[in-house]
Amino acid sequence: MALFQDLLVEQLPKLRVYARFLARDRALADDLVQETIVQALTHREQFTPGTNMKAWLSTILRNRFLGELRAQARLATYIAMPKLERHIVDQEVRLEMRDLERAFRSLPKAQSDVLWLVGAGGFSYHDAAKIVGCPEGTVKSRANRARIELDRRLTSETPNTRPTRVQAAMHGN
Image (cartoon, rainbow, N blue to C red; front, side):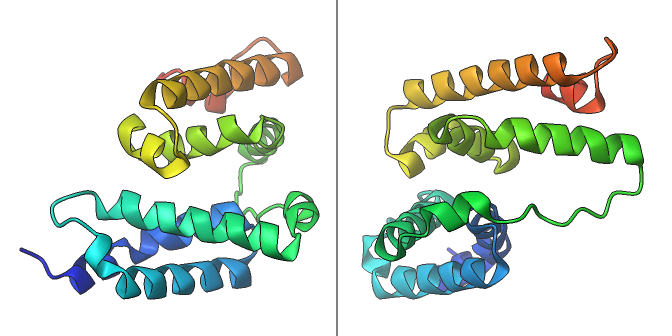
């Protein structure tokens, strides 16, 4: 059986990605990851061996982030932070990604959180439900509503009727 520290180190890249998604600021994301690791090591007895380390750590990280927003009243800064830099050569893809990002950010927070977790984050509905603290059925419903709303917004914003690459990917094409 892998040691606790080995499991923790294995999850660091995933934690960094999730922290950067939440914080939209590299320094804050790095702080969140560090605080998450410290808290995980401090409370390692609360982790049940054989369960999902990724979900446990992601829950800690998300709770740290929400606490940071509340404690320092960063909500306005969080919403107004600049977009992530994109290094996409193809102009069409860049425009589609901009539209997707705009549509994604306009979703209700509860929907965008679960869609990110089960879509980009690769979490199961079960694990996502544990992270956000709601029933699995609620996560499925929020993710489905978010996908439908994204599709609606992307379709209404796309000037031609040809589906974009992003829309095709959303539908598994």
